[in-house]
Each structure stands twice: as structure tokens, then as C-alpha cells.
Length: 192
Image (cartoon, one colour):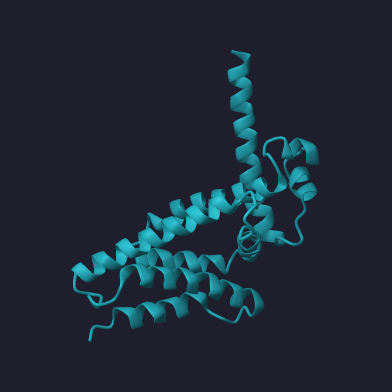
């Protein structure tokens, strides 16, 4: 019995770490947040914090996974229409620059074949492209998107634009990521 209670406590602490990390990184920025800062925010030593994760890289992967979970609950299930949900989520990213920095940094690092978070990003992009392509197909069937457009290509371009706009926004925060994506969607939905 004690073991089960210990497991539950460990999972609760892990959840606290991830929730707190989202807040700290969003507020302070990725570069200005150390593992020590995260550990102190939840009352642990660095070793105690990393005990809940297999490595620093896995900690950051889990923070991003938690961010996706929180964002899905907040945006992807509440607004009308998938494009409105996605645009709201992109606009929200402008309010949490530290998490955008974290995502951009870890995503680039994960391009290395041996990076521990590589599988997470491969699966994440695959899931995103699949969802976007399904949405484009549904819009084509409803007569709102040119039937000659390739849904898989549109999905890949949309995902690439999202990340590319985030990078540009990190360099110049006068860029309105949501507005640019909305304009692209307007172009993609114009019927000929």
C-alpha cells in the first residue's frame, strides 16, 4: 500500500513541477530560467527535480507536452471551427514568449538523430499535419476550399508557416503571427 501512495505522491509532484515550469518559463523566458530556478519554485533540489525525469532534455520535452495539453484544453476544444481554434492558439503564443522560445530551441535541438526528444517532435508534427489535412479535406467537401488543393501539402505548409512565423516573431514582436496565418488561410480558401 505504501508503494501505491508513494507513486501517487510522485505523480502529483511531477504534475506540480510541470505546471509550475509553464508559469515560470512563460514569465521569465527560456534562457532566463535554469533547472535550479524550476527546482526552487517547487521546493526541490536540482537532483530532486531531475529525479522525476530521466534528463534535463526529457524535463523540457515534458514541459512542452504539458503546454500542448493545457493549450488543447483551453483553445482546441472551445472555439468554433478548427482554423479559429488554431489562430487563437497562435495569438495566445504571443502572450507566452518564454514558452515559444523553449519550443523553438528544443525543436531545433531535436533535429539531431540522437536527441532524446526527437520522437516527440516527429510524432507531434505528424499529428499536426494529419489534423490539418483532415480539416482541409472537410472544408473541400463543404465547398469552402478549392478541391484541387492537395490537403497534405496545405497542412505541411501551414505547419511550416506557424513555426517560421514564431521564429520571426521571436526576432521582431511587431509581427502578428495570427494575422499572417489568417491571411494565408484566406488565400487557400479562395475558390477559383
